[in-house]
Amino acid sequence: MKERKKELRRLIAQEKTRYCDSTLKALSADILANLERHPAFQKANTLLLYHSLKDEVQTHSFIEKWSQKKKIILPVVVGNELELRLYTGTQDLAVGAYGIAEPTGKVFTDYSSIDLAIIPGVAFDKSGHRLGRGKGYYDRLLPYIPATKFGICFPFQLLDEVPAEPFDICMNTIITK
Image (cartoon, rainbow, N blue to C red; front, side):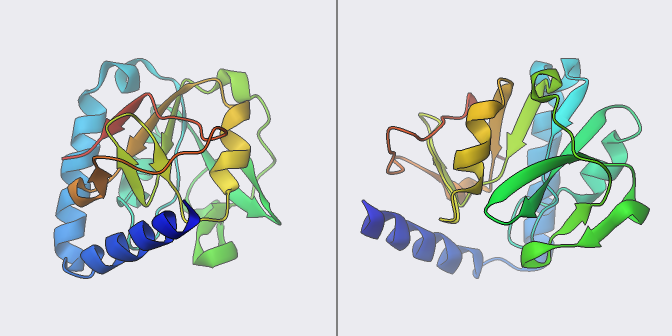
């Protein structure tokens, strides 16, 4: 299974190179528009989001847009764990692990108040299984997040099957274009 996951990560990375930045940005806008139309998003007051890397569905302007209307929580890499922090604006972001802009405010621990968790991944399948980057950050965090979980991805990241382990947390819904 480890080899299959490694191979899928390689294939998806290879597929991403076929798209220019502007195409990924346009796809991101369509995907996020689909997310905005979902009733669970519309009802949610507190969102767990992520500050995207260059090869993920682009969330930077989306976070900025919605932070005026909803409470946005972002993960911060601390050692081998993800800590959650409240997003308070671009002025309070600092570049952390992996070159990700992360909030610098106090730690957010009221996991039960999160209404919707929007999770990135290398790949997803139609059953809600998620393939991450292989470090296990979300595998360790998600069991503590009781909220509805949405995976968001580019269309080429939605596969027929992603290898799953018993400890993997499934997404309730996958949002793509």
